[in-house]
Amino acid sequence: MGILDGKVVAVTGAGRGIGREIAVLCAREGASVVINDPGVGGSGEGGESGPAEQTASDIIAAGGKAVANLASVADPAAAATIVEDAVKHFGRIDAVVNNAGILRDSIWHKMSHEDWRAVIDVHLNGAFNVSKAATPYFREQQSGSFVHFTSTSGLIGNIGQANYSAAKAGIIGLSQSIALDMARAGVRSNCIAPFAWSRMTASIPAETPEAKGRVARLQTMSADKIAPLVAFLASDLSKDVSNQIFAVRKNEIVLFSKPRPIRSMTKLEGWTPQSIADELVPSFRPSFARADEVSAHVFPYDPI
Image 1 (tube, one colour):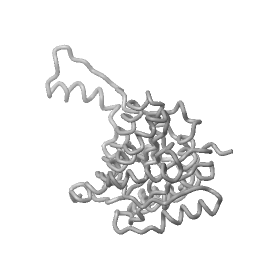
Image 2 (cartoon, helix red, strand yellow; image 1 turned 60 degrees about the horizontal axis):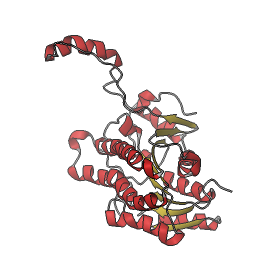
Image 3 (cartoon, one colour; image 1 turned 90 degrees about the vertical axis):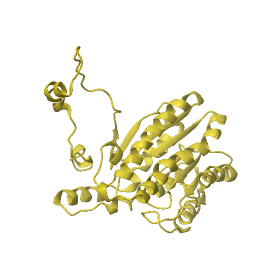
Image 4 (cartoon, one colour; image 1 turned 60 degrees about the vertical axis):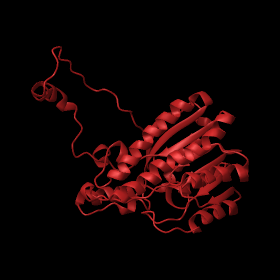
């Protein structure tokens, strides 16, 4: 008996990397899986059926149940077919894993409008589109689980990823709102920020000693380490877990805090720009985040 026996799970971006590992483990745990992947390149170019069909075939060959779906999550009508395929082939939908993504990295002042829109469309709008399509089924059956993939680029920040960071931060807000709005229907919504070496992270530039060290650490973190937390969140074992932000870093699972006030200062006569500079900033400065902070500063230790 697997923890997902009788469940139907849709995984976007499931043809390769993290998404494939999630789909394979969910199937091994008893789920019927919709393998969504349009087979595009890392920046969203092209498209082929091979990755999705190969993952589905591998699951079926191992005795599981799976069907391939080639839709682009960026298109609302196409994204809806992911959920429709789940219901058509397996009779229901129990969990949606919003994992699909592309990268178009560029330093901020060189980022084009097209590269901004493309990344927002796949990550943020894609998560909205697939989640929106599943929501009527979740409400009707009074159960369901959304697992959205965010990133430390959105939680902490990263260089050359304004589009990706904004999309991933937006996904956190989307997940939080879904969790609050859907709680009365017994529906859960959570986020995961994965640390893993994949086609996406392989594009990280490694020109400085610090960057090379970061990439070397990432290369020790395999995509299969992400899948167990996803399977747990998709299962009934997580019925009391919602509105959370997790990270997985090899064998370490992290719970992130949400933004909360950390310092406060009151001036009864009101503030002026000069008094802010003279009084408030010196008081707040010990609690300021680093201006140049990236995830490597928050996680400086080797993965466990």
